[in-house]
Length: 303
Image 1 (cartoon, rainbow, N blue to C red):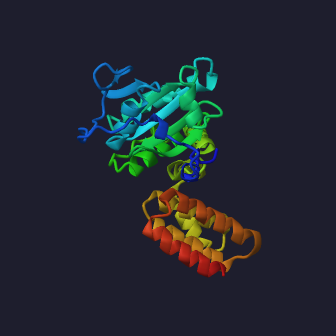
Image 2 (tube, helix red, strand yellow):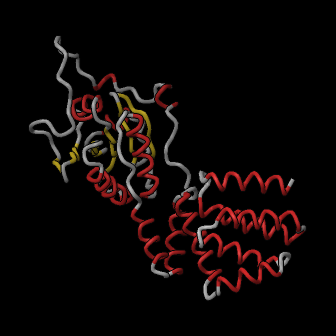
Image 3 (tube, rainbow, N blue to C red):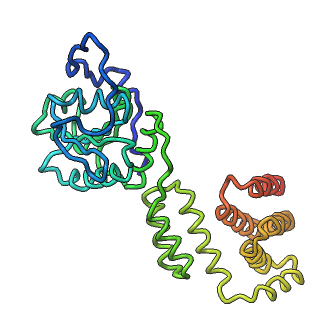
């Protein structure tokens, strides 16, 4: 699924007009609004984070004013909406995990049709982020939790909130399976993450590690390295030797081995070596300086 966020252009075109919801400001400046419910507010504190049921009458205080100091995520929902019953519990759980960094405001569209109309809600669930008294981002429908986490992180950054990146529990489970040697379970877990978040670099690296572990299973490392030394043009022997070197912490040596092999081969063999080397790059990640250097060497060897 693509990024659930939509551009802010719908707001700059005036699609959301909140002026009717604002009441005249008092003559003296109001005290800053802190995260947490005012006295008598609907909703309740869940795990130290406020999840508020909002109506048109309370929208200004619970959303607009509160968003001046704390980002507010507004969830438009209805009791009859089955997708809402999938998304809302996840939003509530993530609000708890947020530890007060943001507030979840829930709007029943049946009870508050005017609010839904002002936000141009055409289908639910519909989720808006409000920062500094203005909508800044939105998405509709049910999205994977991983993308939802990324969206919330972006909202917090827009609100100037400094928060620690939360670890994806799915990655933890996949990594545990890999470390325990359950390669089938690890592969399944990494592929599931990539199906939901295709650009997840950690899952890509994990999946590449699964492939590496399978290729070297049952191999005598020293014998494989000796065979590669004796047969410098044996493609399969060189690929296995490179795998062993990566596992032994000699990634730079492995990359140099395969770049040299690219220079000496052609056709299908050359492409096989190139793909294998790119797979090894994936394990380390694109920001690894050794990978960056090896990529330049590979480009030179190819072109």
